[in-house]
Amino acid sequence: MDARQHFSALLAHLQGKVGGEEGFTLAYAAEVSSFIRFNQGQVRQAGQVQQINATLSLYQGQRHAESRLALSGVLDEDVPRLQQALQRLRAVLPTLGEDPYLRINREAWRSEVAAAGAPLEGAAMAAQVVAAASGLDLVGFLAAGPQYQGFASTWGAFGWYAASSFNLEFSLFHDNGQAVKSAYAGEQWDAQAFARKLDGARQQLAFLGRPAKSLQPGAYRAYLAPAALEELVSLFCWGFGAQALASGGSPLQRLFGGKAELASRVTMEERIEGGLAPAFTAEGPRQPLRLISQGRPGERLISSRSAAEYGLIANGACGGEYPLSLRMHGGDLNEQDILQRLGTGLYIGNLWYGNFSDLPAGRLTGMTRFATFWVEDGQIRAPVSSMRFDDSLFDFLGPQLEALTREPELLLPGGTYGARQTGSMALPGALLSRFTLTL
Image 1 (cartoon, helix red, strand yellow):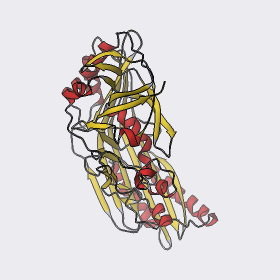
Image 2 (tube, one colour):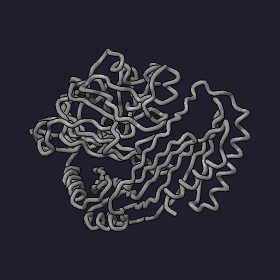
Image 3 (cartoon, rainbow, N blue to C red):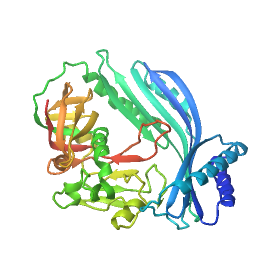
Image 4 (cartoon, rainbow, N blue to C red):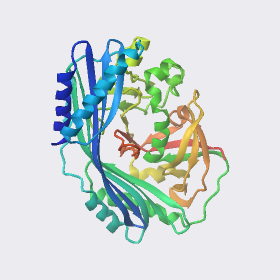
């Protein structure tokens, strides 16, 4: 029995057991993932995880409760588990208070996507990595395989999503202990695309053998590669949520409050097509949203609870009200021209970590890492010692933003805690007239 059949069979069982004043929703998540670790350019650990988790929610009036289940995929084992969970929820539901912000989507919507494509073979991908990394101290982690998500309700809603993806994160280490970090992710493995990624990291690795350059605190011209920009965007993207904005706790408060604008070349959207997330959430079908339009505030991400609390119209956002498939439009900067356009300044391949130093002002702080280089006259001259940065998103995505690269890069989350994460970001690189280092 495949995953969709399994989900449909569980749904059919519930439909025969729940009725009258009761209602239910059933969320389903499964994966068949290969995990492969590399060290010194060789496979050191390989394994596979097959798991299924379901969340059953029971509703009666304004009362609701939920139960999370780990399933086996064997229907004769899983149906009794589901029935036991239903009985427990029935017992606890009368003891709960009413939820004033509960708004159930009672529409009979339908969304079904099963991405076509050749199966991802983790062993074949690993063999290519090992062959290409010959002579290099490559350390990395590959996660690959299909993921499935389903959602259904008493009221006729049905969503199904099946897609395969891979995410390879790797570092090339120099003899001096420093490293260049890179990543390659997508839906279909392309040996040539991976070779280009590896070659770019190999070229940067050669510069790590040069004496590091120490910089004084101050503002410098800088180029942020997509991976570095992702670290910053991921810090503030939850600020598009209606609850965060309505409560005054969003780092984008100044933008949506009309007190600030970003550069006109900044456009961000929550997309449906082209992303790696289901076209639905437990709230209903997701909608494509223009979050920032040419530097000006666009639409908010609105869940049903925020809609109820603040008198808004829900648009299918997940309960956390953060984008699942964020895409930032590219610009006119060709990749081969990045160093020449930078001239003299910092090339920042990725960032070590980031955090807020002043959330209401949108100020972000963090550290650079090994793959930060000093560039003079369009040529990489030396690695840069790790430095702390502190700058406002209203500046580096505002008047300090000079250009964006043409093609946004697909970036997948590397988290595997509990399960492989879904979702994606597609971000360009950003050329900045100044980026502030503090120590």
